[in-house]
Image 1: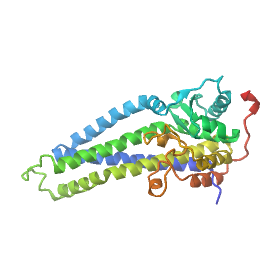
Image 2: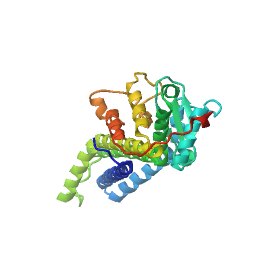
Image 3: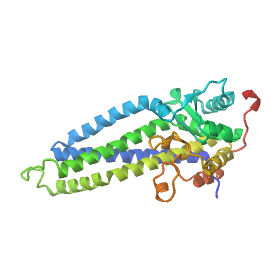
Length: 314
């Protein structure tokens, strides 16, 4: 496989994510407009969609980290309890040029990790005790660097927006379908009712509303997968050692231990999907295949690797 430059990987993934978010926003606005059109006030639908999305985004933005940590049964870990984890985290934070995130631990033998926090100043890196027990130092560096990439790239903010927009697509689509088939139909004498163009647009809107849950889920998954690739590339930028994260991902993939606190609400945050599935379930996974991630990592040209001084952790 041809070796690639990780800077190109980062740039490409950012462009694709912004494109997907743009398409997502267009779908939300279109459904809001269609709902308003049925009510006879197209702009009202647009304003309503915007206001609801902003309210949901505000709540998710400020409280998502607390909710996620609580759902995951994570606890803060003191420096004295695990200076090893703190040293790795602080060293990579310096390399990333961001404040050192707070460290949390999930007491579970299943190896995994995630990051949360609305911005680098409120970042959190959370790992399981199983991950700490399983990984060599260079592998732990790769995992923490991946999570550091999520924090530095504001991925939690992007993911929050994606979740909110997906919810809006489903909500508006459901409202439109219910209004069309169960609501009070507009009179044929309505000046817009006889307009062929408006009728065609309404038919398109209804079709979009029926398909909106599938569309929203696919776009959300595509954004999540793009951010995983971006965090992988950022990890290589920070460690200059692709094999560290690649080796860690292979170990995580080989583990059959199930993370007890994982759920569909938090699965997209982890470095590997804790809800492993096969067949069609992999198609709707929030993570790209580990085999593909490992192949991309091993194809990256990161230059010479200079490991951290192990003595600093003592």
